[in-house]
Amino acid sequence: MSKTVEFYFDFGSPAAYLAWRRIGAVAERTGATVKPIPILLGGVFKATGNSAPITVPAKGAYLFTDLARYAKKFGVPLNFNPFFPINTVSLMRGASGFAGTDDFCRYCDAVYDAIWRDGRNMGDGQVVREVLTTAGIDPGHYEALIADPAVKDKLKTDTEAVVARGAFGAPTFFVDGEMFFGQDRLDFVEEALKAEEAAA
Image (tube, rainbow, N blue to C red; front, side, top):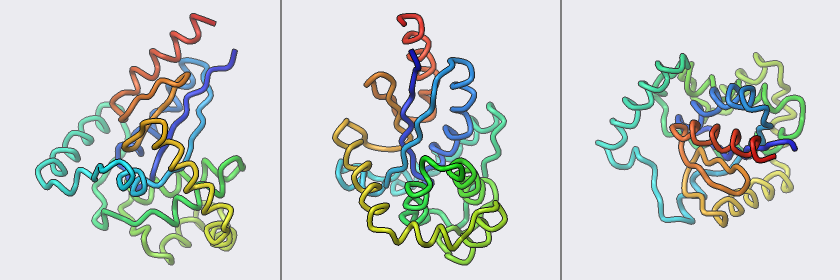
């Protein structure tokens, strides 16, 4: 029986970036399939009454210190983006539009690296076009996707759906209906996948 971990993410979350860089190894070790699902973190916050850690200065400062520890531990390049927070609505529409295509992972890699490795201003349309062109993705196709009402609706629907399942932030994972929140819960995600395998 094929095991699946659902991975809900937003490019604006540095924790989701670390999870993106680590979850492939979890899948390899467990034989699981990763199902990445783009959502709007701002929409999740609004629906649940949650807020970004950066809105509490002391918490925001600690968060980046803590994430830097994880990045070092797992060998993931992570740099504070001087343009943070970035409005990721268009970027997440792009992810939703590319989902299920051969360009999806390439697109996500390019956007994540631009924000959390290279410190680019991905809230600037021209910068986005440059990043996508370098990654071999047609920026014209991206711009058509993010203007597509069906893509907009899908992103909104997926965001509402994960809130209905109990999510309040990103990254959020589900294994066989059980929810795990945060990149620091990937060990539990892996354990759940292994337990599911043993029970199969």
